[in-house]
Length: 181
Image (cartoon, rainbow, N blue to C red; front, side, top):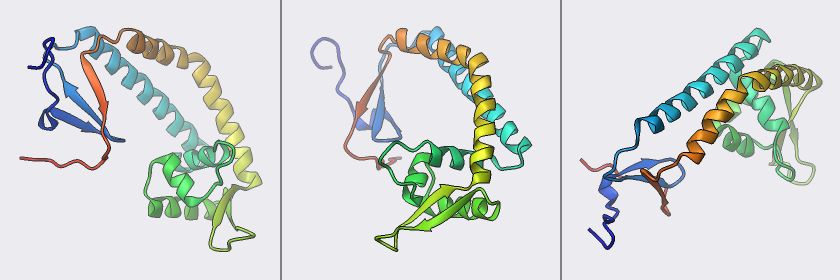
C-alpha cells in the first residue's frame, strides 16, 4: 500500500484495453447501478447498430459499404479520403479497406482517383449513386436517432455523471500488451 490507502499500479493487475489504455481494478466493487448503466448503454448501441445494418441491407448494400460511404463523406476537413484514412476511420486493416473499396467500386458507389501531383497516392470519392444512397440512409439514421437516440444519450449522461471512480483509466505509452501466464 502507498500513502492514503492507494495500492501501487501493478501491470499484472490490469486489463489492457485499446489505444494504450489500461484499466486497473480497485478493491472497491462498482455499484450494481454502474453495471446496469453500462449494460444498458451497450444494449442501446447494439439496437442502433442493428437498425443501421437492416436499413443498409434494405437499400441493397452491405452495412460495411454504408459505413465506407459515411466515413468518406464525413472525413474532417483537411483529411484526404485515402485508403489509409478510410482504414483508420473504420478501424480496419489496410487490406480490408482495399477489399471493401473494390466491392464498392464494383457496385458503382465510389471511385478511385490518382493524385495529380503524386501519382502513387489514390483518393476515394463517392459517385453520384453513392451520394444519393448515403443521403437516403442518413435521413433514416437521423430519424432513428431523434427517437431512439434520446435513450442512448440519457444512459450515456447517467454513466458520465454517476462515475464513482471504481475503475481508473491510465494511459501508457505502448499499445502492445504482453500476456503473461
